[in-house]
Amino acid sequence: MKARRLSNPHLALFVILFIVILASCASVQLIAPYDERIEKGITELQRNTTTFFVKVERQGGSDINDYKNHIEFYDHSKVATKSLFIRAGATAQNKKTEEQILLLMQKFELLEKQHKNSGLTPNTIPTLESSFDQLFRSVLTLEVAKKEPNGKKKGE
Image 1 (cartoon, rainbow, N blue to C red):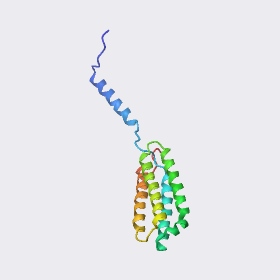
Image 2: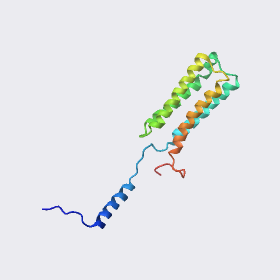
Image 3: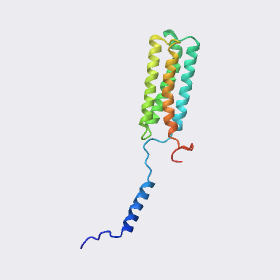
Image 4: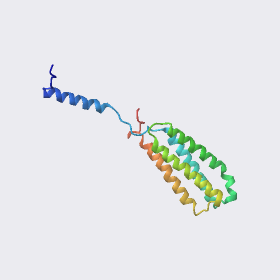
């Protein structure tokens, strides 16, 4: 028995068109969806960090002996960043957000180490604050970009 060849060009065109339409209905998601808790968590952490820098700058810096008065800030920052890191890691295709939060965790560790070992001078505070702001902005920009252009979350 011979195999029949598709001889009708209109039928072939219809089949190709049908496959293209069917394929266009499938959605491909290359990045995790928007996460409101990450956005709110980063925003709160940014506020707390800015408050810390404003207080230290207002008091004329913070020496090694004053470090102990700021341990609560460092503890809160560690808990907050670790929680955000775990949350980001629990969502598929969220590697970029995870990486940015990991950088933020490392930045807090370096800040604490500097504060503990040599203190924070008024001259270094603007530079430190600016580098933190860049990281906060990076995480928030990515998270907000995950929203649809009309302000709705993806998938709504």
